[in-house]
Image (cartoon, chains in turn purple, yellow):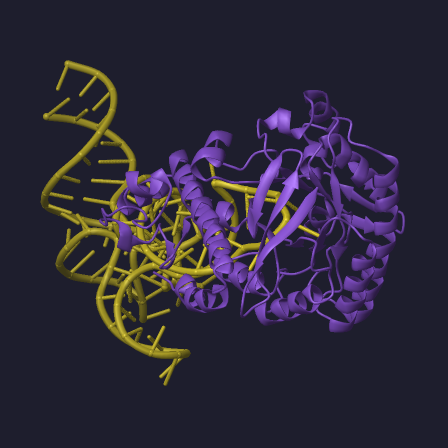
Length: 376
RNA sequence: GGGGAGAUUCCAGAGCGGUCAAAUGGGGCAGACUGUAAAUCUGUUGGCGAAGCCUUCGGAGGUUCGAAUCCUUCUCUCCCCA
């Protein structure tokens, strides 16, 4: 993996660059559509590639490990071959799943014991295991095994959890060092900053993660319920410590406005379920704001879904029609909404890059954020 | 022509003397969703309103302190036998 920053914004910490992997190169800042179980729900890879123009997608260690099983994906020749996405892929380590499976998990120094949400089978995930599985799945970018600290969370717990995540990181790095991708291409391991919403912990963690010298770094444990101001504060603090020349990945963020604000703080990579999940639930994002397509007010709005949209679905279907599909619970509703939302997110990130290259991202962002949050 | 069953709030369908503005489901309306156990979940659904009040359970009468619930009658539906 190689990363090069090509431009920086004049009045913010935003930067644009290019990231190279063995499966292709893409521009940053970038958004990675979430394809948990090896599929970005409701979309064909062809749509992802040709219509949405996604450059990198995400997969999930936890889900793929449980089903179909690491072995199957490995035998298929790795995740790229298995799901037909030949571009770059990042896999999450499963740390977040174990966090969101609260209630049936047990943390030990060695790892986490948890129960499968599918059949209740108990498993032990260790840092070594998380890395080995990701080696075999074969994503280009893989994540260290961490604990995503819940919010709210007391300082004492946040510190203990963070320290354990740091110890786990050493084990991940060691496992990464002594193994290789069975599919013959190179992978890069990103460590994850934790520390909840405590500035001193975040600082410690960022310093520790920076010292690991990885090819790229991630910020985790945010957008888990804390006020957005806190999220920005932590992000800003951590970005100031993580090496400037390495890509910074803010995990799980976020809304269009969250993304623009975070780009301004120096973030390069994002992933979030919002465009896909909220899309399937009827929430659409546009340049002019957010709309709930299920609302009665769209029932006879025969104008295009999004006249400023760049995806074919934005012009081929009307709001009234999409509302009808949602109300009728038609499968096409989820497909169109996902296409639209991801198309919009891709535009947002592309445009951000463009504004950074012109040096006026800050001004553009300030103007956009308000619009983006407007409810239509 | 004879015998039987039933009419409940948008719909279906409980309730069968007070705790009923009326279960439950559907439909409608609205909200939530941030490293996806989610094509999911939540709220609301007679009218005004803070407690409370007012109009509702096919129509009209009646019994009762009190009726969606009991009686009489009318209207209408459905089923069976001729």
